[in-house]
Image 1 (tube, rainbow, N blue to C red):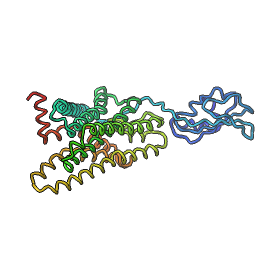
Image 2: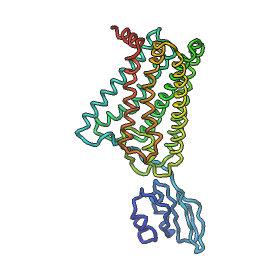
Image 3: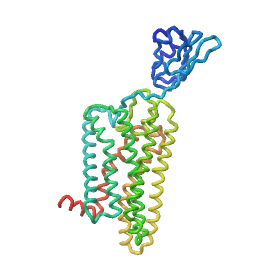
Length: 387
């Protein structure tokens, strides 16, 4: 490439990093040097429009990556190199929760403890429900699915973070990052839909008690769970495919402990307007829509409870909803706080804090919330572990 040092435009291009965005580069090159040029360097991994002009009166061949030549009035031939959309980065860096070395053992121990409690607690709930024939009702069917999804949800992010801390590494492969985004969106969406389905179940149980067994039949319960899986999988697939199209011009440093979608999109070296729009649409339809459904269900539940004459009856009806309401408030309060804010409106610290709440704390607390106030679950757990 040093042979180009005497040609116009080269010094300006060389003074910049090959990874720097440049809108257009023009240089004049003799035909004799054209074959020796490293055109991949000129094009680079960024979205460039490179203009290459030869001094010969004709061109024998078109350089790779260029359009067919167009003659200029002076007899030179002009090549326009197409903007490239190549993702040549094979690894990203997860900066984690803290860069302080003395805090790493504390973070490792804390998150390992929370992860083990989450997996163990939700696994107990799941096994206790499927092993007890008395708990084969719609409410507990949905709860067992929620416990299974919470195990998968937490396992998508925490093991990788613990491994990086243990190995004193911050790297995650490009394929691993994309896979993490897909499964994180998949299980987050399933949590969202299952909470909505559970709200509908409580609505039917309180507002239509005489028709509950007819409406919430096994076929409908299975269909609701299946539709939840399909819609969540479709959304995560669309978001992941759109992320795959983004070019990354450097090793991306993600100020997070997992590949959070907003942070990855912000690191792309191109316009991400379409990706941002899709995130807002998905948040509106797949989070805002179910949330409105939950609010509507509970507005009808409150109206029905107010119509109950006895205080004991009101308390009994409302107590069946307290656990679900607690989980809904915890989950939606953190998720909507992350994805309905503009990417530059919140700091990395706030993003990490809210992400820890819905990826770690919420799945951790779900077994306690649903078991401490539920006599059926506590009885099933005692029988399952042999107490």
